Length: 135
View 1 (cartoon, rainbow, N blue to C red):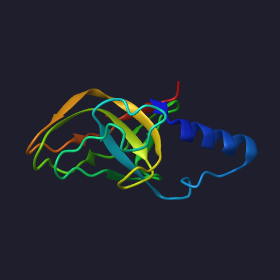
View 2 (view 1 turned 90 degrees about the horizontal axis):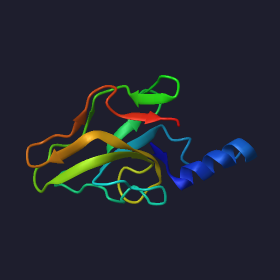
View 3 (view 1 turned 60 degrees about the horizontal axis):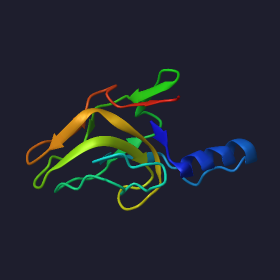
View 4 (view 1 turned 135 degrees about the horizontal axis):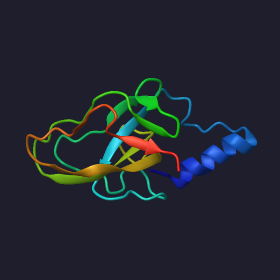
């Protein structure tokens, strides 16, 4: 798991200066899929998959993650739209602030195995299959 540089800076501002990040107040974040590591300095569109009908998945902050100490996992089945054309291979996921467009990417992680997406495939992740671990 990797926090973006923006998220790291915002967390330090919150901790050390009491400045709340603008993205903290919203109830929703968005799950995205990426064809390679989106890195720490880029936005939500960096290496984002682009099959026909792809859209990010809305996550409710209060209920979509389970806290197990130093690891958080998805608390619900997360389903992306079914591919209706094109293809992609997803290797990473990210959590960000925008339903579409650049947005602020807050964290990203590697999928357990690459996911080949083609016509008729619906990317989905069962409970506890996505994890974010504090190092």
